[in-house]
Image (cartoon, rainbow, N blue to C red; front, side, top):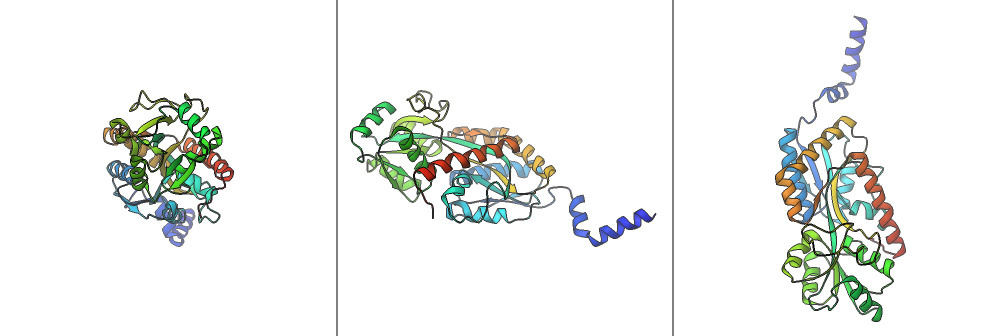
Length: 321
């Protein structure tokens, strides 16, 4: 009897804590933060995932776009949210590169987040202007070495994946090509199609229609294996540059210290969503591959990406600030 009275007194004093412990997750709407504007690849992936998660979890998963500062606005909001499973983040490669590129960051990707699973990865493809004569990587490297400082590569901005991919190619091959940053993918694509820039590492999602139609030249895929959508295009490794892999990716993050049962439930629901025909067909149709890694595997992957791109950023003396 006395034990029951003590337990009742404890729960009376800590009513909210007890209620939370007994609450079945999820019991209300979940917010999924996206650090980019609506309509982009990350936003579309988030919405496809949110739709399936809403069905399986029995609660609405609402996409909340907070664009700006290389997704750092959304990331900082998520990092400082309660670790209760009701605020999530669609993390991206920016959460790895920003760790080195920004001198003052309002969050730490490994300290402040629990990684749940990778949702999609899309390899970069080295594309060229229609008039550029090189048809493979060896020809491109020969031309670039013969005329240092003449050819250029476009990116979607300083510190973006296409920018760092270009810097990595320069480091690995010794070529001297000029970086031309743009404010987004659309103007970069326009100038590449028009021949104002020579080449660009583009995500398969954005480049695929132009490559399949022949409107752009294609040198190689920055992945360990060829893309099923471009089976005749060799990898850059096949072209003679070993261990050259550059992918844009996104994945589900939760604030650090989110309870393990909630993380496991979100992981199971996410894996089921990624296996659904609706989500899988969408990802593969855009040149990507579905994820589904365990939380531990995804965390190790993110840590490896931080280290890999940190070396490139430091060597190229790139600052995002």
